[in-house]
Image 1 (spheres, rainbow, N blue to C red):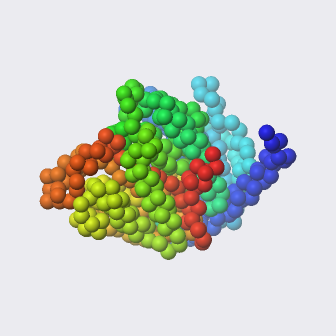
Image 2 (cartoon, protein in one colour):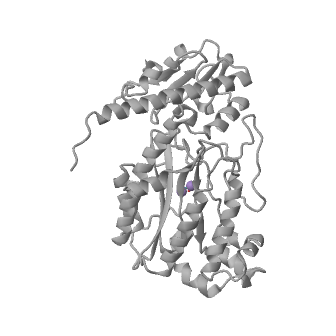
Image 3 (tube, rainbow, N blue to C red):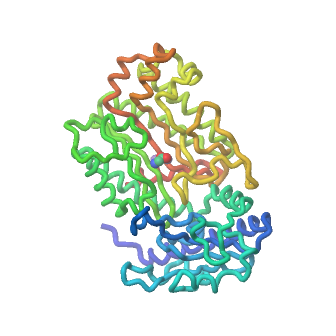
Length: 451
Ligand code: GLY
Ligand code: MN
Ligand code: MN
């Protein structure tokens, strides 16, 4: 075994510190612009508060305000506040309550702390003394229940439009965080595949995933989709069957991980029989998906990738004898949408489905989805720094197939071929890809290649 490199940890820490400094500088630039547009002096962002279940004293899992975690890698600190004022070091008002019921947040520590004036408070209302003098001069971004005194979230639209539009462009620090989330996710995907091949139930595969990621539902960026056999045809299958089926033919897993508030979103599909026809279909989708990832380039309209994907997937259906008409005709008459009934992907970053997917500009406006494609979540033209998923799929969904069978295009497919593929459910392959000035960076494939 190789000896660990000397001083590896300090140099990694220095690298992250430099990236973070650059990230904070970029957020300052964006904030200055956003405030100028709306005529405010300060950006004030509450981290959020706990929400309680109706007629109960139980709280829901806390979800941090994304506008807050954009600045600080803190995801478990309700009752804290961020204040950014152009020309000043940002202020973090950090709630560390006296509480013997729960583990209280640690005193702020780590590479990010020096970038803030940190004020530790012990009670939520103590924040008032440290917020700017005049709440009327503040753009306050948050949920209504974060209101404290005069600091009632006003969520000025020009400020939100500007910040959310630019959030699509990841700083190198953010890409590094997403890379780490991906490293965790891919390690867990490997464990899940091994559990599938060992004949585990969906629930046990899910547990194997969580164990390998060292994350559970409180940290995972979305609920795991772990689907054996025909369950792969349910797009958001979350049932986690407790019993293993008599025979596991196929396995679709859509599962992510998070790191310092950033997400990865990864889907893989496996066949038990690596020499069978379903594996060949997976391989065909895989090759097409790689070509789609290569389209993540400056100036490409993301809508184009989605529409091209319909043609590519219809071509595969034709090649495998499912379609009897031309791929072009199947796209034209909507039959491709029976097998690929969702969007090609979405922006990703602080949120697994990143905001502002339809934003026409940083001053608002909307770019509509193409007619007949209601589930596309991103319609923007790609620019450097944008991080998107590319997630084509082919599914044999009974509900949609019934509609096809009863409609005027029933003769455009070979129903006996569909019957052969139905027991396998479906295929989705999903990578997270960063657009750059040069070739795209495929965070997911890079990591699968490394482990
Ligand atoms: N995991 C949800 C999605 O792929 O969008
Ligand atoms: Mn996705
Ligand atoms: Mn996914």
